[in-house]
Length: 255
Image 1 (cartoon, rainbow, N blue to C red):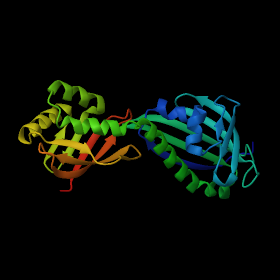
Image 2 (image 1 turned 45 degrees about the horizontal axis):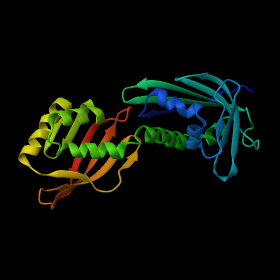
Image 3 (image 1 turned 180 degrees about the vertical axis):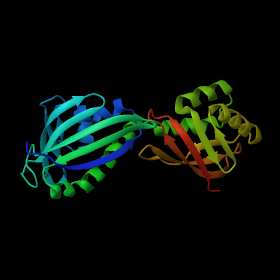
Image 4 (image 1 turned 60 degrees about the horizontal axis):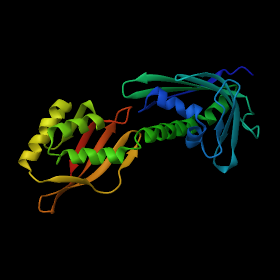
């Protein structure tokens, strides 16, 4: 290979564990989920890499190194030969565990600076898409988790509330709205009990589908009184930990 003296570097943080992130380099279905239909990878040294972009543009390469769950190196070039041919550049991806998830370091090495510069925006886009695809898999159960969160506020059993909260939120869960600031499950559970005492019969229900992006979940809700009348509406913003549990929630009351 020609000397690859010109590097493109990019770093993103993904709200998932390194083990989860690395599966998207070794499982063909997951590989195609962030590159495009028809993209394939034979995840072993010497294995073939195929990337199919929209519009029929195809990239091919070969796996050089594979060190689960922290490192993959592969060559990268265009089947058409332009702007670079197969095997003409090299991509190195390293994964590093950090609080809240995984830091991905990408280096793409080229022989020519002009070709490097042509790929800057492409990687900016592709890695953002990648991070969201991974987070989307981790948080595939977000709708059910939101429903369980809202159900806490009318669950009569203290033991059931504690168990549910432990399953859907981290012990350090932070909760904020215009009426309360609490840090940690040990502080949140008594707050929920007090809310039931001061607002008896009130229940919260999700209003429409949740929205997810990069590990943040938005969910609209309605508060219904014991008489069945809607008393309030609002939106909760949840930030998810690397394991999919909520690590923070902020509630916005709209009425």
